[in-house]
Amino acid sequence: MKGLRAGVIVCGLVLPHLLSAQQTRPLTLEDYYSIINVGSPAISPDGARVAFVRTVTLEEGNSRHSEIWVVPSDGATEPVRLTSPSYSASNPRWSPDGSLLVFSSSRPNVDSNTSSSVWFLRMDGSGGEAFQVEGIDRTPVFSPDNRWIAMTRPTPPTTQPDREELTENERLIEERFDGRAYDWMSYRFDRRGYLRDPRDPHATPSQELYVVSRDGGTPTRLTEMNFDAQGPTWRRDGSALAFTADSYQRDEHTYERADLWVVDLDGNTTRLTDDGFHYSSPAWSPDGRTIVLRGYEGLDRVIERKQAHGSPIDLFLVQTSGGEPQNITPGWDLTPGAPTWSPDGRFIYFAAGVGGNSHLFRIAAGGGSVEQVTRGNRRLSSVSFSANFESIAYGVSDPVVPGDIFAAHIDGSNEERLTRSNADLLDEVDLASPDRLVYSSHDGTEIEGWLLHPAGYDPNRTYPLILVIHGGPHGAYGNSFSFQRQLCKLQTDTSFSTPILVDLLATVNSSSGPFGVVGVCSTIKI
Image 1 (spheres, rainbow, N blue to C red):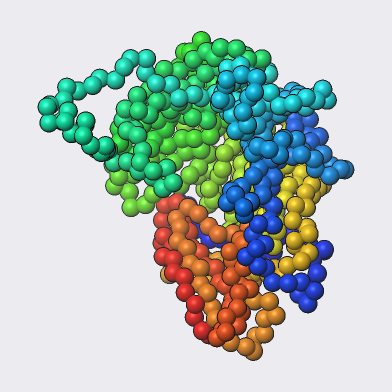
Image 2: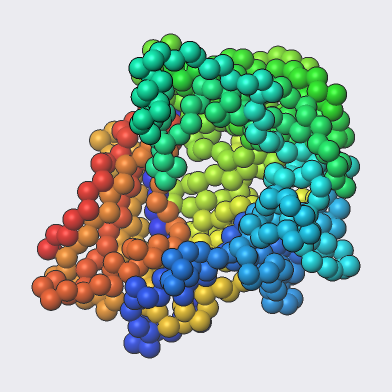
């Protein structure tokens, strides 16, 4: 069983350019609009360049604006902007040969009537404006041989929906009133409003899988499932795709339980699992015989088995020839992210949270001990691999750095910091690195928290204490920058001067133990 884990913020990156507290000023609310966020790094297949997203917050428009930038992975030159500043852009990805960079943007296409948000840039030195490719209107997934692009598209049924005969009263009501009737459980969602009927494929078309030539054309539909295909991934030879899909998706009385499927380019579909687990993020082995993916017991299975606990998330191997999935992380006490297979087939890499940090890990393809690859009191995000797995790029954040892009060797060595996005602001403001707190839960499990001191903290003075308490079960505060917490610790008032901020978090990664402390925010004079 997987145990209790908690988050802790500790200083991660040393900033030699920071001035002393006497030379800096407190953080202000207006500084929020000066912070530049960078993320979504994508390293080129040859490992030479890293594309990433640079985002700023616009006070006047109450919005955010994002652009794609690129920087050499050795940090030899400064980053340069790739996309037009007139339109937001995000989600950069490279073609397997490195000649194209694809991204998402809402910019209009003046040369056609297409409304696709998928755009391409030539990166082979030929230059030119961003362009679109016929038939590619959803996030593309390139085949390793660079011949095909896969994508999922909403596909309504070809038949018209049945319409029930209305009584005279029902007809009058429909004519006179603009009301809406909802008789399904998931009828609304925060920030999405009222939802369409998930049971009706006409109201909520299924995401079916298509392929199209890399050069564009008319997409060919591969699946006809009436439920969503998710996370498609190519076999190394480009002859088939693996994906996950929940055949019970339209039964609102069934909890999620997506299975693993494979489809070839002729549309022949094979279901590889049907065991009540919920699977996601499949990845093929280099020889095409095995698929690794994340999985956990679905809630229906937990209830049916009358378990007194939930399910841990683990990595499983599934043979394409058949057989039961093999759990390769049963004794590992953390939660693995999406797996990626090394080209030589020896290792499976994945990210995971550990305490307040996030790092890259790996495990031998046949199972065994999990090895932590990167280290430090910080959070890594969006790890991207070069084609030969010699280089990686990733985002880094810690309590005093909002985030930057780094590159390194696959073992974490020879790290290069590629951006210093907020260097000017960090030179001006006084930020605090928290102290780590450790205490024992009722069963002896260590719980971690952290303490932020105010600027000019004097242990002989009395300060108010602000508690930020958050429950689990599957998330944790950690070594990432929080404008809110840094601002809060520097605020003053007439009665208490500058407060201390304390963050405490208990979180359960899986199957047993307490669910953490219910959150309470208050100010206490101590």
